Structures are given as C-alpha cells and as structure tokens.
Image 1 (cartoon, one colour):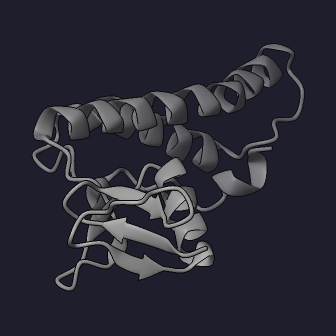
Image 2 (tube, rainbow, N blue to C red):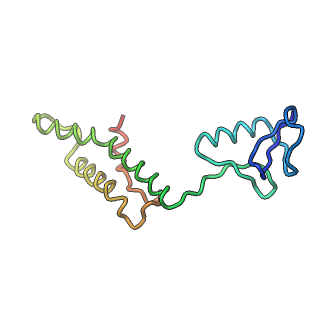
Image 3 (cartoon, rainbow, N blue to C red):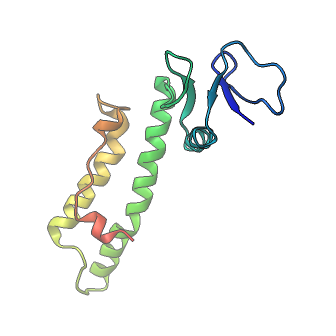
Length: 142
C-alpha cells in the first residue's frame, strides 16, 4: 500500500483503493499524512509546494476575519481577567488585605482598558500589535 497526495485536487489517495489517480499525485509517507491531518485540525491548511509535495500553511484571512479573530481573543482575555479585578474590589470592600498592590491594580485596569480599546487602534487587527499583558498577571491567573 502506498499513499499519494495530488495538488490538483488537494486529496489523498491510496493505491490499494484508488485505481486511477491524478497525473500530479506524489507519493507520501503515512507519517506525513498524519502530520498534515493533525495540522489541519489545528486550523492550518494543506497546500502544495513548488514540487507538488503537500505542506502545511497558515490560512490567509481577509481583514474582516482577522478582526473577528482579534475581537474573540480580546473578549477572552477580558473575561479571564474579570475575576482578578473583582477579587481586588471585594478585598477592598471587606477592608481586608489585598492580594494585588496598588500599582498592580492600576496596571490591571490599564491593561483592561487597552484590551477594550484594541479594536480602535491603528494597528488593529495585527496580532503582533496586541496589548501586552503585564508579566505578573501570569502568576495570578490560574
């Protein structure tokens, strides 16, 4: 049994099953096919290189899709930070010691504001220009 990939169809072929294959079919290993399918499950796309061999690529997104992706990322970050802000407010209202320092709380609020303002940024929706999370937050987040 041998496996093949054809760039013209974007399909995989098994010579034990397929009696006819496209002219551009190239032989691949079972391991490569598994890696390609695993990459596809991670939102990558299977394409062909200049020799017709299958490769994984990051999909090209239009601006609207990129903006949607960034808003989803931003909304998730805000949701994951709410408990930290609420805990600090609760500690203040109970007149107990706070887990965060005043400076950390101010940095948290500034980060949340940056996240909310992210879609209005000139750099939006470039992933590399996302607001930076203060390092200490990673130690607080479960």
